[in-house]
Length: 492
Image (tube, rainbow, N blue to C red; front, top):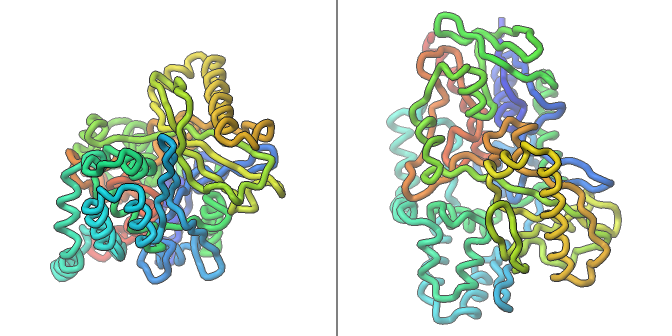
């Protein structure tokens, strides 16, 4: 008789866990609070337009890589699924200067040298470092805690070339690294698509993934990406119970036996996999009775382990923007946002995705790094909360029109999503779209997916691995099932 697994949350981690559960002979069911799967890997429709709410670029879009094979196995990618790779990572306009970061490393180098020949030594060094990161992938086959000595040695040999460089770059922030450049425009460009307080290794890892063709955008975007994975799970015989939020994990004699749903129903299984937000797990599902010291420490040290959230402002534009930059950052008149002043915005143009807008129109999204606590306080007065969303969306709209006069009277606000939006729909801690950020003062974080004192409970989700993201979510879902199998084989 097959063993039953309950999975809490139908995000990418939960769906992946479900797929591997079905492939390995388990009976699984996912309980999901929302009415659709995908978690934060999602999108939504407004006034005939589609707003993508997640993927900027996806690690693992290059065939022949381990992460691509994982995406293919679970249905997210495949031979018939197109991947969009722009020639440009980002185009930055700063003090009448245009800086383009190209995906091709030779064009990247040539562009930076043309802008700032006096930075030639630093540019050479940077390109050398990027090439060192080409082909680097996190271990995916199995988690560290399940590797034997031979496998750990093999991984160490594989990491030998890049290990010393990563150790060096982990000790400094991106901001510290780019200070070595003389040109201010280059400094801004290199910090325009990744937070400058992260460890410098993150910058090089990201640039290498993008330049090697391993960081593209899957056709039809995030929601369809999630739907393909959901389809794979259901085809394997898995089940999803939507609009069913877990309220408590039922524990008897130190063993997880089932979960209580918000409607009061109790459901039982041999194993439980929480693949939801980790703060929600400890605070709500476990009623604060269990504490993981590492995670507790990280939540209480946000300067060392930052958690990031955004305000997403989406616009429908009555014009085909195929000839406009796809990712750009440009200066605007100083504008109040939250309790600070901003003087530039980041804009993503989805003209390459025809399914996102009516013919002849385009969706664009402006991303603003947000302060959850500020929005939480503002939401105490619902009218003020909505007025602020309207004010910033209209202000940003005027900034776009000033930058592109030909778009005047062709732009309409579609939606404004704040950190509270992601908290409401996904239980995302402070509306975070990633896990704990990696900074020079922080330690590399890896969780073995177990909670001391509870048997038959195996965690999954992006929060288990430093920086998180979709690859971490998928890996953790696979690993949760491997740990269950390992425990069964050991008779635990």
